[in-house]
Amino acid sequence: MAAVFSTPKFSPTPTTSSISPLNPITQHHHHHHSPLHFSPKHSFPFTLKKTAISCSHPQQTPSNSAPTPSPLRRPNYIPNRISDPNYVRIFDTTLRDGEQSPGASLTSKEKLDIARQLAKLGVDIIEAGFPAASNDDFEAVKAIAKEVGNAVDADGYVPVICGLSRCNEKDIRRAWEAVKYAKRPRIHTFIATSAIHMEFKLRKTKEQVIEIARSMVSFARSLGCDDVEFSPEDAGRSDKEFLYEILGEVIKAGATTLNIPDTVGITVPTEFGKLISDIKANTPGIENVIISTHCQNDLGLSTANTVSGACAGARQLEVTINGIGERAGNASLEEVVMILKCHEGMSWEVEEYTGLHVQPHKAIVGPNAFAHESGIHQDGMLKHKGTYEIIAPEDIGYERSNEAGIWTPCLRKRLEELGYELDNEQLENIFWRFKAVADQKKRVTDADLRALVSDEVFQPEANKLVAE
Image 1 (cartoon, rainbow, N blue to C red):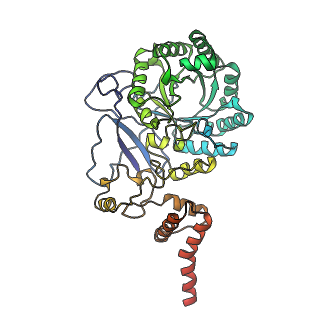
Image 2 (cartoon, helix red, strand yellow; image 1 turned 90 degrees about the vertical axis):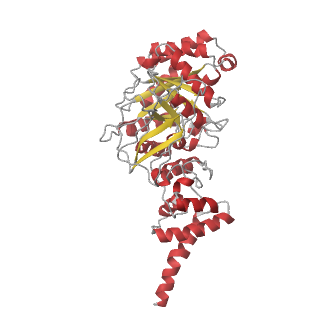
Image 3 (cartoon, helix red, strand yellow; image 1 turned 180 degrees about the vertical axis):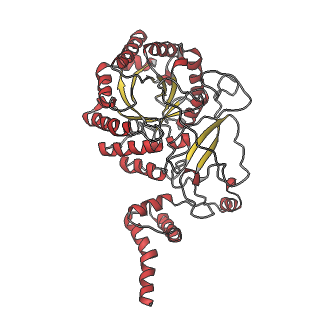
């Protein structure tokens, strides 16, 4: 089953036409919008053909069902170029930035489990960790590179495995030693470029920072790595002219991807889109690299800023499962691409391993994301699902438990993990009992679920046998 989604677009500069969702290399303006898309693996039970980003409101589909597109092939991977100008690479940093969430900690086994699922999802790049941070992180990244980074599918897909490093030889060498076992290894190196960071954290001049960045990108390439990403940390607060200069220098040194991070989450969509647009227009050699975004969520705008960056020409988007990450988190993968492979499993796995529970109202994967409690809403849903739903839950792996729009994927998943296989009628009956218990308790335990199954399934069968 294929799925097509269209989302309202954040227009980065409503007063001008300089930012376009079209070809990232040439800015020819047309009257139609060419959609951006990424391709999950074709082995999925469903595929996302396109994630459309238009500057206007999406057209309403007259029927309840979405059109069925044909699968779209993923372009051949070239580090600094994408043959399809509208293809967007998905860079997942759940295992690196996501693990920096306060209170989150992943074992090496858990990291490998999540990396396997990210590969099943079909993300283009997995940032597996920060190898220089600890021996455990180094070994985890190395294990992911060896296993997940070599698991080539029938279509030739294999994820890029990336390791983060600061701009120094020790970090970069350590990153390379971890990721070099992958078929597509990448080193991601960074240095701060904002005035406040350079003055108080680095205690270095602009000239010194440029020289460090240039020489360290060159050093990374000298190790044999032909895929090097560079990030000017705190780009959102950096002087633009300085950004154009340092980015031009790292391009000459061999960088293949330029990631533009809003490190403290301070920008708004118009600002961030303009930043990407200006970098694209003023950086020498920019046509020879991929522009990337990395947006933190301190003001709740990480997803909006990421989409705005894509509209302005970024063709790599850095995200995490459930939006976890440093402080208030990152742009969430499920919100940015509006699709997850068996997301009730993937999202649940990250939630379970990190201990960071998804809030009920979380977009796409939250328990309430497709719940309709209002009588007016339920009446509308019964008449036409498009009245209150802009995304069909079935298109992203959820199951519709009844025509009022109540969803039970998380309940079904947990019951299966507890060893119960229930038919739809049994699950429906248990769901209403589950909801009544949930209304009385903040958390429903496994013991509560077992009791509900016993009441619904085993007690009636026992009573039937007694009657016979």
